Length: 287
Image (cartoon, rainbow, N blue to C red; front, side, top):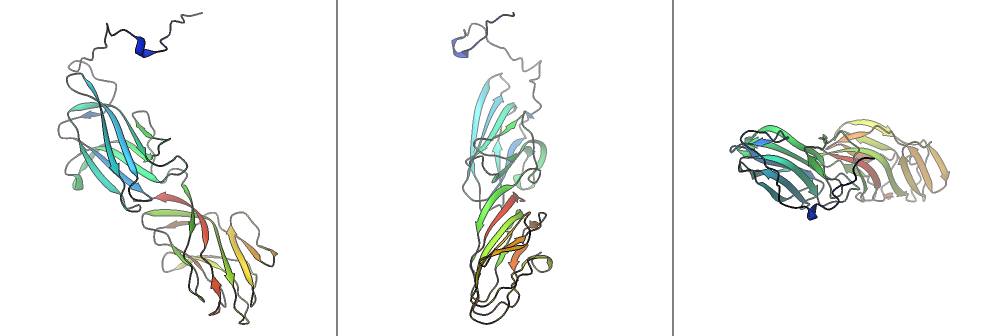
């Protein structure tokens, strides 16, 4: 057996011998040298404003001292993105971690950290240190982390309550700016008036103007009928009972900002009322 004299508590070790760093004749095992003209550029995009983002770093200064540093920032309005510049001394960045004040259940804060030259509005970015979605439990890290683009991952699962249309009007939901959606499910109820007509609830998708996809079951709804219309992946079109209509939804409906999810109820009458939809999307930030 080998030696078992392992250090289990670093706080008990003697300070008689200290590690010496020769900053003039040796290079630290990192490739993030910061000159006096460089700065740290932090870009953040989030689903909401005022999410706290913290950047922690350890810097090796020219005199050989290692100093910790912390920068705190807040995200701005929905998904639009905001940049901050942080001044740095001449140093080596030994390590860096970014956390965002959200839990790990969703990817709702996207952060990119680079070394850049000012001015901030027209900066030249020279090195990408980190990029990806950050949370409290799953931080971004450098130099051992993995950089990830905003789309190269599973998206954030969101359940959204839409808007209630006026009587006799269809539902219309718009993908917000700087977002990309994959629609997973869409549900609403329709209460038909006493006017005699066969209504057929369809769901259509537009680029804001032009319809590019329509789905719906060939099931007619009659006067004075209330029914829950449910569109989801991997189900056959069916009318399991008099109050529920289930319809298959395409699994590849990627929707960009400005695209619309709309009902297009055939023979919709003036007194018919649709409820606010409840729908499930997978969302990516696209600042």
